[in-house]
Length: 175
Image (tube, rainbow, N blue to C red; front, top):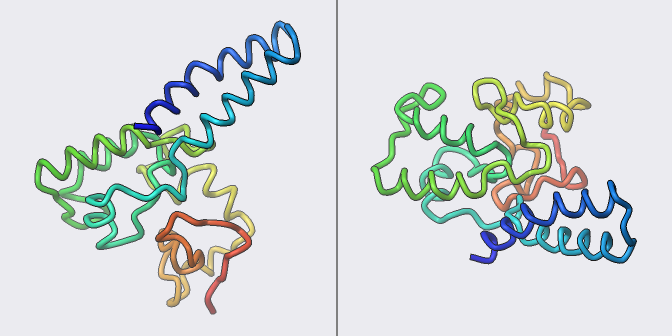
């Protein structure tokens, strides 16, 4: 519930902060207050470290890291859920209640990462512009190593991936 409130606050405050603080330059105090409230709303919004929905963790995490919802926009998640019968070459079909619950959760939390604003090609996180920028210093040959498997195996290099932790400081590329 707090996340939903924060999302609504964020949606209202962001345009006001821009309008008042940047465009009209009306009072530094008001602009600062709005920016502070926007920052608080940002802090309450879903993030990589947010605990995933248990059914999402169980169903999706059974085959791969249960990627943080914010890594893809809600439209990509909706598209992926609509094609679970052929999910990247695997039948990942879910029963209707689980699919609905996961879909609702992903619709709410999808695209909450600052850079996850557009649908990447084939709804692949690893083909999104922000992901490619983040990994531009990593040689493509690293992803094909037997110890890594593929670019979508986040946990191979990010030990905290299962907990939504992807800090560059913690990266360990296996040999």
